[in-house]
Length: 313
Image (tube, rainbow, N blue to C red; front, top):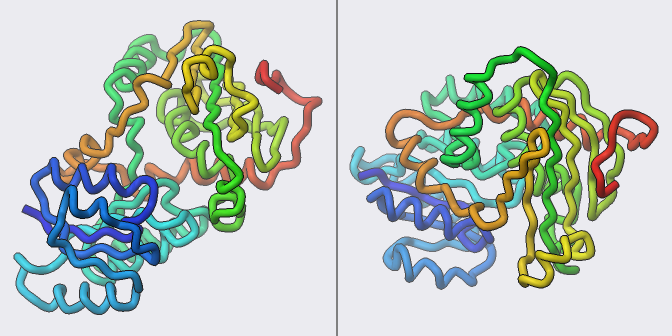
């Protein structure tokens, strides 16, 4: 049994991590969040210590570090806002604990190299939650792509991800590009990682649209040409999704054959934790290609005159 601590327990994604820690048979000793609306802890770990100041959390963690192997923290889960991820990962490493960090691992790619250095310095690992890589249907798709090889023309891919967000979204840290990385990082990083994992390295990236609510472009990968579209506007939801009361629509079409994610985009965090605890997991270098791509997209000027556009542009 491993001892966990969790940073950002009041956030949206934290319950998936609480469930994963419980379902893998481990215990949660300490949590921290400036927001004290964390009654969900009673459902999973009612005895865990809660702090609403990171300094007091750090002090408690340091006290545990100086105790026995059975008492110290072995893993720190990071669910804080994007711009704090690398700082909280560094805190975990200094406490001689492995870090399990939500996406994105960092907002700016140059911070990845420092994390690699700290891994070596403290002898601990940094893991990134890339749960689409453990999705059974996507694993099967990747195996099929690998079996077919690289002969023939590139696959034509259309990726669409629309997830409705209200006015609160733009007032929160998620609406700040400096803090979240903007729409391409905040909701797109999952899918850019998946595309690179499925179809290989990035050859060219063209941006057609980039606003606070929408982004779109063309991505040339080793094995595919991808037209992608991201939106947080409910106005972009397909009519069928609106009629069914669905707040999100996720679709990827490969050579005209659609894989619709909206009904199967379930939490895979427990699978990720099982993989990490078994000696696997996805590390800093696994996260690098998508983070570098998103940084390039964020710093590109939209140009509608180049490349094929997504149908919704």
